[in-house]
Structure formats: structure tokens, C-alpha cells
Image (cartoon, rainbow, N blue to C red):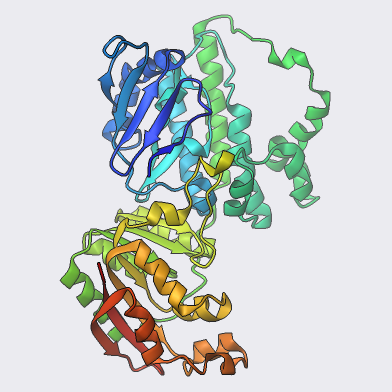
Length: 451
């Protein structure tokens, strides 16, 4: 897949292939590129993994053009704000402000502030838009990206705090976040008249009716020190607001105890196959994701519940395993998004043939019964997501969880059993190992994909 992801940027364009990320910097973006390459702060952020590294391939005149071609290391798995739990959006906002404040000391800044500037390498946010770094007018005391930062970070986090607004849904349909005028009606009436709601949403929504051209006139401080002081004070205020909107610790919605036999089977399978990239589907509490990461794998964990993904991100952030938790429903995976569906590839496109192991444990009955997806199609999709191995749990119609989901529709699943399960699996996989568990009508399988 060759994807051009940055046609909105007049300073350059990015081409992403399976192995490379190449950015062509146009003349309009050359000064911003130099601001990044010549910045000691930028180099420090690269060293600690918080800013994407940049290597110049072609300078102006090298290929007879005024363009500069640079290359970045590829973030293993791209994710977007419409797949992040609130804690990840908060971490992206923290990195944005941290970079702004550090750049201020050397006369530079960020021209924009959006979650689109951030990708996650495991649980670590990485700022990727190097052309957002620019030389700052030393007398300018205004951060022009302030309103954008509020729309895409502060106000969404505020709405989530007050109303549990599902942020992954917000960003799927509103790429530029949500403004005060739209947000004010979603806040509880008493709260909107008290800080921080008052300053973030209520007053700006009222002031928007008084907007005139005078607000766009450039302003200058009396000297460079005053401008820097005003901006530094402003960034401290934004950090304080952001700290007050930190999502509360997520509690997983699913807390069922994993049987020892299941845990041992998965541990044994991971030791045998020694995976490098693992997809954990319906990760729930994240125990299997942590297990795979502990075995040295890079893990992407998906779950339809933001609470589960948020709790796993907090655990991964604290322990530093290579886990990327995302809010993705396997039954309704994230679609392609943006203009002409070009800006953000679908989850299935990004995941195709990316993982060498997929895990689907304690979940297939949800997709079959609750989501009414045919069993053969589940295996068809799984075969596109793993290049080698699948660890999956059979859950039969006699299992209490299966029956609870079926709710009296047992007649629809009279055909279903171990033999039907294995027949569907063998269309794309070979059975390598099985284990009958003590639980009623359950079994574990290690499958190898056919080629």
C-alpha cells in the first residue's frame, strides 16, 4: 500500500509504503524544515523518542528541483485519534505542550496543534509533523494554534469528563474536533458556568457572536522578553487546564478470571512460535497482550470498550511493554476516513499481513451471536490479519456465555460444534495443537495459516 497522507500541507507531502516514509518538502516548507533540523530542542526530543527522526536524502539542486526529500523511520502501526482511548489523547496533548514550551526558549514554536501530528510507538506518543515546527516572530505574544488546541484536545477531554462523550466517535466524524459553540449545549447546565467549562467553552461560545476582523490583526509585544514571558505563562496555564482534565483511571469492563489451563496454553504457544508482531482481538483486561509483550513481541490490542483500552494503555505506560491499545470493534472495524477516504486507511488495510500471530480468546461467540457474523467469514478475515499463526478459543453453544448471548435462539446454532468449527478453520489454517479445557464446551487451538 502506497499512501499519500498530507495533501493539506502546503509545505510538503508524505508518501508511506510498507517499509518507508518519504517526505517531499516543497519550497514553501523549506524554512520550517530548517527550523527543525537546526533545533537543539528537536534533536533532544528525537533522542528520547518523542519526535520522529529525519534524514535528508536530496537537497535543493541535487535532482534539479527546489524540493528537499527526507526520510523518516516508519512507526510500526499507525493509529488515529478516532481509535484512541481518552488517556492516549491526553498524552498526545501533553507532548504537544511540552514541545511548544521547549521550542519557545530557542525562538521557535508550532504552527498547529492537532492529534494528527501524533502517532504512537507502542504506548509512547511521537510527534511526526516536522513541518509544524517554525521560526517564531520574536515580538509575537500570540500562539495562533491556541483555538485548534482547544478544539482538538481540551474541549473533547472536557466533554468526556462531564458526559462520558465517546471521543473515538467524535474524531471519526469531526476531524477538527469540536468548537465551543457546539460543545456548550452538550455540557450540563450548572457546570458550564464554572471553571474550567466557563473559560474553555461558555465564554468563547458567547464571544464568537461578537467576532470581527480586529481579532485577526497582528499584535506585538514591547520586546522579545515580554513576548516570551506572555507565551510561557500561557503554556503554563494550558498545562494546568490539561492536568485538570486528565481522564480518570479506567477500570476494565471485563474482569472474568482466566483459567490456568488457558493461560498455560497461550504461554506455551507464544514460547514455541516466538512472535514478533501480535494482534490481540478483544483484549479485555489485556492479560494476553501483556503476556505476548513479555515474550518480546510488539503488540496491537483492540477492544470495543474504551475503558478496556484505556486501562491497558495505563498498564503499558507504567511498565513500558511494547503494546498499542486501540478502541476498535473487530465486528465493525475502523473504516477509511478523510477526504476521498485517503487520509486515514481502514484498520483492516493497515493490519493486512502485518501480524505473524493473532489472538482471539473468549470472543468468537460475541462475533457469531451478538454481531451475527458467519463463522466462515470470521476465519476469512483472520487469515488476512496474520501471516503465520492464530491462537483461538472455540466456544460452543452449550457454554453458558454462548447461551446467554443466544437468548433462546439456540435453534439457529444447532449446526455449530467442534467439527463445524474445525471445518471452517481448515479452509485457511492447519490445526497444530488443541486443548480441551475444564469449562463447558470450550477448547483452545493453535492454528497455522496455509500458504
